[in-house]
Each structure stands twice: as structure tokens, then as C-alpha cells.
Length: 132
Image (tube, rainbow, N blue to C red; front, side):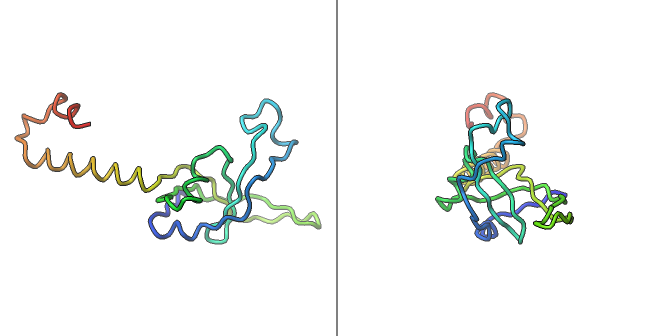
């Protein structure tokens, strides 16, 4: 199930740790994450990871993260006694920052103004290309 958080709700994302090394048994030389690290975050009591190269880390640090979309699911967690249990997990699907949201809002406002003020036949590809 997808879950989106945005606006002030992203302020509830908590940084647990950064610079964590991937498990060498899982991330071999052929894996795209080989040689990189990850950050561990928590939202709504659920921990999730983000690769260190993902710009979302800077957005969180700089306070410009605006939205995040997760796939919410379950995973098996093994405790120190070897007992397995099912726990919630999030997989980050996408995120936006405030600058992106402002630019999109400005574009939408411009298009809305064009659509409202121009006769339908005047809104063509040439006009749309000139405002983008």
C-alpha cells in the first residue's frame, strides 16, 4: 500500500544514523550500492533506509524536504535469539523538495491563467512551448 506524507508531516521523519555500511553479504561488487553507505530514518515508528547518494538526505538536513511516498509492507525480522517476527517496513518510492513544489505550483498557476484567458483554439503546442 502506498503512503504519502507531505508538508509539516515530513518534520516527523527522524534521522537515526548516517554513514552506515551495507552488509557485504548482500551488496557485492556487482551491486549498484557497492562502496556506498546509507542513512537510517524513522517515521511513524518504522525505520527505512536511503542510499547516501540520494539527494533526499540533503533535503532532510537542509529542511527543504516537502513530500515522501512510501510503499508500506511487512518484512521478517530476526531478533538476537533467532526468533522471527513480522514487522512493518517502508520502501521509499519518491520524494520532492520545497523548490520543486514551488516551481510546479508556479507552472500550474501559469497554465491555469493561460487556459482561463485564451480561447480554446489559441492554446496550441506553440503557446505551451513558449511558457515552459
